[in-house]
Image 1 (cartoon, rainbow over the protein chains, first blue to last red):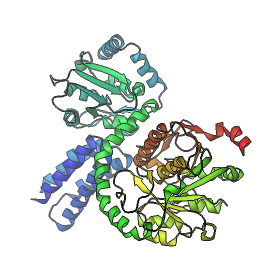
Image 2: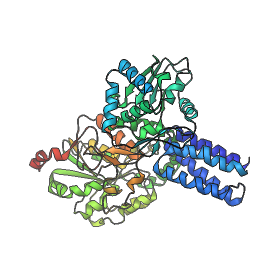
Image 3: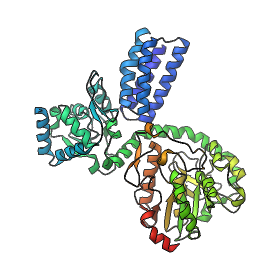
Image 4: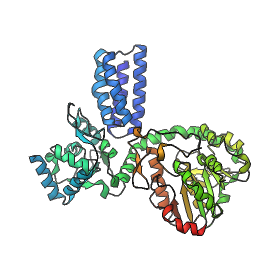
Length: 88
Length: 440
């Protein structure tokens, strides 16, 4: 399976849980997603434009820290995924 | 404006009195409720929480609606949000009754004011109900608008907590399942202790009709050291692991100490204990605790099996008394006090939140400052009726303690420390102080 597919799968799991109000499980899935993303970017198995990542990731982290989980889900699904899909 | 008037008249006609309740709540709220301005779809942002998706509201509602089986004829929607959930649920011909529970009346008012919901509001299958008017029982099948739970009104907070605990249950269950193996191995290792150690049941009934103070490790404990000292001769003290050292530093020695923590780090609660003052004090322990602690304890040891999921099953070869917990040692200490025969159980340091922005009473291991501004999503009402930052697991423990207390009407429960959580079924000690001072 391509690295992006794995990330997409984990991302869908995280956003589904967050939209259903399962915060703990959703956050757990998000940690796994960020871990996968980090490993993918480090190994080069996925690539992403740095400026786009620098735009999306801080918003994601701020929303996550504030517990604004539906916005987190939006950022993951409608922003991060687009950034990743662009170059992979 | 036409849509607002229509919504208002529909609500006034179908649910008399409800519109004015929503309006009053909106008038007195200090919440920030603003529409998004630059998102693909408009939503509301309540105190920093997006109420719905700002990209695909209906897609999100369809996902949330999937928690309700296709063949359901009745369902509950906790949180109106912008009306998308009832909207998509009404597409199902099987559904005959949809109870939309308004968790936040001020949010509902803004929702009806700013978003047209007349396409579903007058459907006879819909009923609008206030969360504050519901019993704190989750009705099933149900679906939630999760952001609205976070901004629930105070009167609906118990219902909100029940819903959130219910939502967290599958994840908690998985987490507990992962611990079972650890607990079982630990209990096997500790067999060498509990094969010969005493039985907690020897304490049961030993303090019939007495007052027993259960000392937990919350920050408000320190306020009560003078009171405990003044009443020391008339009360039995049962301390939980985290409270032992602070209590000893305050010059108070417990009559029993309870520990159930399986994590090895928990031994740090005992690092600075004054051994010489504990040689006669029983340690009531669960078989899952760190064996190093059992080796170190200077006094007698009494084993207790735990009644609760995921803890190692009792060893039939060595029968011992059983104590309750749903995850916190405070439960176990309370159950011990009740089984010892207490007529009154006095709770100290049982805060279930972060008063004074700290985790524990000063002097306890792991006591540290908490950044409460990052903990807005979980809170309890304290003894002053104010919101106190908490954690989902603390809230679960609190609700389980309330359930336990509800099952013990024969015992009077009192609590010191209004900066901690209010506990249903528990009186405030400061309101009965004169009565207790007389008996000292």
